[in-house]
Amino acid sequence: MILIAERINGMFTDVKKAIAEKDKQVIGELAKKQTEAGATYLDVNVGTAAADQEGTMQWLVESIQETCTTPLCLDSQKPGVIAAGLKVINAKGGVILNSTPLNKKTDEEIMDKYIEMAEQAGPKASIIALTMDKNGVPQDIDTRVAIAAEIVQKAMEKGFDSRRLFIDTIVLPVKVPNAQVQPCNILAAMDQIKYLADPAPHMTVGLSNISQGATERSLINRVFLAMAASHGLDSAIVDVLDEKLMNVVATAEMLMNKQIYSDSFLKVYTSVKKP
Amino acid sequence: MILIAERINGMFTDVKKAIAEKDKQVIGELAKKQTEAGATYLDVNVGTAAADQEGTMQWLVESIQETCTTPLCLDSQKPGVIAAGLKVINAKGGVILNSTPLNKKTDEEIMDKYIEMAEQAGPKASIIALTMDKNGVPQDIDTRVAIAAEIVQKAMEKGFDSRRLFIDTIVLPVKVPNAQVQPCNILAAMDQIKYLADPAPHMTVGLSNISQGATERSLINRVFLAMAASHGLDSAIVDVLDEKLMNVVATAEMLMNKQIYSDSFLKVYTSVKKP
Image (cartoon, rainbow over all chains, first blue to last red):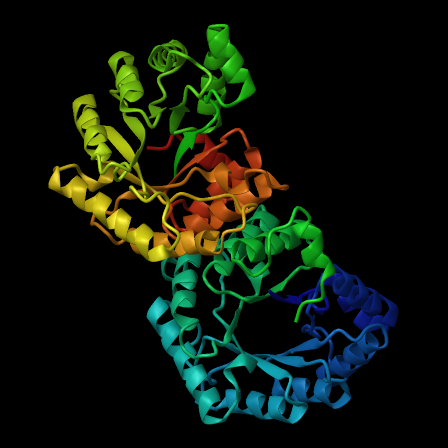
């Protein structure tokens, strides 16, 4: 599973403080710890506090790259902030541009910009596209799948390989009652999205969102991740420092026949660098 | 989820000893503990050690019924042993006859006998039918589904309500390499079996079998149960005394929209008697 580590995000107090104080060490340590825990990519999100988002993105990228070479996942809804990060990044090992809806309220083709930036960043650059459009996050399964189909079609038209596309089916907090966007409906959408192209696009979710504001956050994250892995989810933005979650990832990979069982399957999984 | 508690089984040392010594207290305590932990049914299996299997089944049923009124799941491949249990049982709250293959090697229609016994035991009596036939456990998804379809058809022909039918898709140990009967293939079979009748037959598995001989048994059981619950599994023969497993059951039910989220969803689930 392609694991995008979520912790370098200005929404977390320690990162926010490090950004304010220009404390490279805090960022570097988070980068190192998450890499050691098994991150395939490190998410980089400036949060909302920084006045100069573009400069902050560059400072974060540079701070991380002084410590490790783990590929980054530049996380912003603003193309300008992503572009700023790309100016200073070493994207040889890959980079993900996270994320774009299909289009904005004004019908502005925002996804086109992300594809263009990815093409410029090199052959290993991918994008995360959200199953939402000018009407926001769809309330039913069919519209989610229809938007995913449009995303895949747009990528194909642009000659952008479906393997460079991560479709984020958007999980919403279970704590917020919403009859239509239940987790089970997200799984039903995944069942269809995985067949939209061959080779299939990746599917990802911002896992921790599902347990936002809930009790038993790690348990809810773990159970949903196990379910989603069995419906084709092959990537997730997660807290890789949650050891119990990482054990579930390793077990799910083994049960889905992506890793062979051995008595030390947990250790084998976390010690092997993933694609 | 309909949880069939697995611990009153002569294969476990304490139960074997209790049977040999006719120690009702050990059996009664297991019945009580499993009921309190959330068992919908208590499995009753004499194991292989007892010379008089029919008499032992009756003694177990009577010992349990002196302690609690939890419905029982009489577990034997021998119709005579099930019949002996039925003679002394109080099946008002329901009973499951566990289990029958579609037929035996000689083409003997063994499933017919289990349906007949269930009909005689009353309207709340169900059977567990295994997706195996005279050729044994099938090695591929399609044959598993085909056997399940024959099971459903046979039940329909006999006028036996599909809601009284539990189809056991038979999970095999992950430790035993077997390319065709991987857990992910069992899930793929479940995806089809749930649509074989309307109302759908129940689906169940002997969960602990998947981790037989493996390390991290509870973890493997938990992750597979979460996955299977998202593919329509609505029953399982499990260790209800495994608290972590029970928490996963409660979380899976909540994520699959069968329980509403509340901050105390774990406690709510285990404290409410299930159907």
